[in-house]
Image 1 (tube, rainbow, N blue to C red):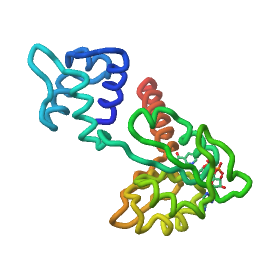
Image 2 (image 1 turned 120 degrees about the horizontal axis):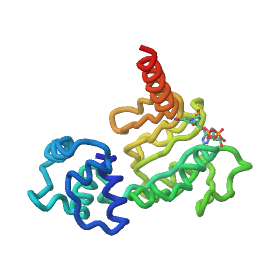
Image 3 (image 1 turned 60 degrees about the vertical axis):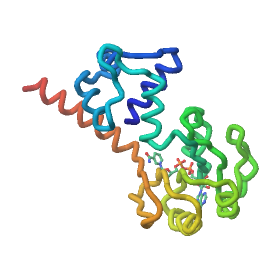
Length: 201
Ligand code: NAI
C-alpha cells in the first residue's frame, strides 16, 4: 500500500485524473492482475473500462494507511540522521508534520535544522503533551533509548520510528517500526550474489 500511495501521489502531482491498471502496472513494474488482487483486498476501487480515479484511490489508500489525517512528529537525536529526517520535505507532503528536534548536547541547542530550532531533551515531555505529538523519530545512539522510552511513556505518543540499532519493544501502548538501512543494503548484496552465482552455472 505505501508503494501504491507513493506512485499515485506522483501521478496526482503530474495532473493524472485516471489510470488503467495496465498503465499503473507498467509504471510500478507489477502485473495488472497483482494490482487488482491487492486493491480487491481492500474493496476494489476500480471500474471496468475506466480504470482507477487517481484522486479517489489516493484518498482511499490514505485512509487505509492512516494518513488522511496529519501526524505530528518529533525527532530525538539531532545528529546526521536526525538532521536528514527533520529536513526532508517529503514527509510533510505526506501528512507527517515535523514539529520539533531534540538533543542532549548543549552545544547543539538553539541551532537550526531547516526551520526548526534544536531543543533540549529535558523539554521533550512538555513539548509532546503541548503539541499533540503522536510519533517519535528516534535517531540517538542506542544507549539513550531507555531514557527516551521512559520520557515518552504515559504521553500521547503512540508510535516510535526507531533508527537505533536495537530491535525496540516499547510496551503494549506504543507501536514500533524498526528501520535498518543496512538490512536493505545486505538484501541488495544478496541479490547481486545470486545473480553472479546464476551466471556462473
Ligand atoms: P550522531 O552521533 O550524528 O547523532 C546522534 C545524536 O543523538 C547526537 O547529536 C547526540 O548528541 C544525540 N543524543 C545522544 N543521547 C541523547 C539523548 N539521551 N537524548 C537526545 N539526544 C541524544 O549519529 P547518527 O549518525 O545520526 O546516528 C544516529 C543513530 O542512528 C545511531 O544509533 C546509529 O547507529 C543509527 N543509524 C541507523 C541507521 C539505520 O539504518 N537504522 C543508519 C545510520 C545510523
